[in-house]
Image: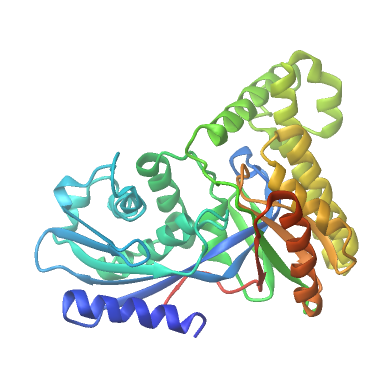
Length: 392
């Protein structure tokens, strides 16, 4: 089993706390975003992958109406009655991802569950790395609780339940990328997502490459308003293009071409125009990259990753000095085919497409450059695309 040691640690902690073996254990991986940055909520396209690190969620029904959660990695326990489930504003806010998912699994009426549950969770996704540890927790939660309560939902519906929990309990207006990537991942393949129609397919990556995540030490947080302001700018731009282009047929930036942006950008504020061009260009890069991957053109694919990062840096302005330094260092290494920030940005990690046989040399070279500039060392991890969330 992948991450067997983490699984065993979670199960043993459950047994120690609740005095019995858990009835259900689920697993959900984190994700890397390979191309298609901030396109999910613009109803666009994304290439992503489930990673080989994730979260285990061990659970059994409670004898009463109490929910008891132990966050193994945090060393904290949270408890509430199912009739009192509500967003946590202060203190143990990590519980929002679990109780929010529980809340929406029951359509906002968790008291309908009748009984509560006892759960322990833990994982090995680096926190703050932009690898979506929150979505992994949501997907592990929703799979396990659906099994416990005998609720049947398709995977896309489960993904949307986790997304709604993040919106309403955690306070982050995320798209569906993180949850869908965690659920639809496949070993050795990327997940190609079409967020207009919620269609997800796997695209083989090939055996000769892997990804390297390079975690900067820049603080990564999306709930501080930076994500929300970018999303708002995209929505404002979409409304503008609907007026000047084709009323009724333009609902999101997915419907706008780069040529149309060039022609009509003058009607937008400078900041809104800059924000809008990023997801428009990303959609075009994802479609082009899918064609290149089908031909086995890894260098062409990697070049689009570099283009994507430059767009993040210059237009969307969701990069930072640390992430830029990692990408700039990667460009000088022949065994790195492409690199870009991964996820929401504003800190976190970069995703590199690499020759896995050169992983140690790549990590050494990037660490040397990063340390010379910032005085500390990034964390470099070789990542293999892996299977999505499932019950153990």
